Length: 137
Image (cartoon, rainbow, N blue to C red):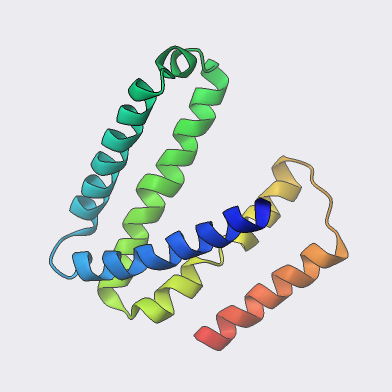
């Protein structure tokens, strides 16, 4: 099941930049992010109401809500804005791989803030990502 989910995630995330590039050529990063966020909000609220998850949503702890909100601000707002701006400036085939290097940042911050261990395989993975950045550049 995990493999199927990861394959679907890669496919969905691989499709999205094509639509992003087609849309951003005639719009602004702000309006693109607003359109994307409005659509996602509508879909998620509809699913929440149709599945009866409204009460469960309202019971999310304040601490978890703040963390989800911060994640949304950094990834969904600021990250998408800068990604759209980069798409306006350069080729999709160059921007997407470079933007997908965020696991390096996550790995480093996970060690610092979540006290996760630095394993040899993680270290080698980070080096491979950095090598990939150099190759795409």
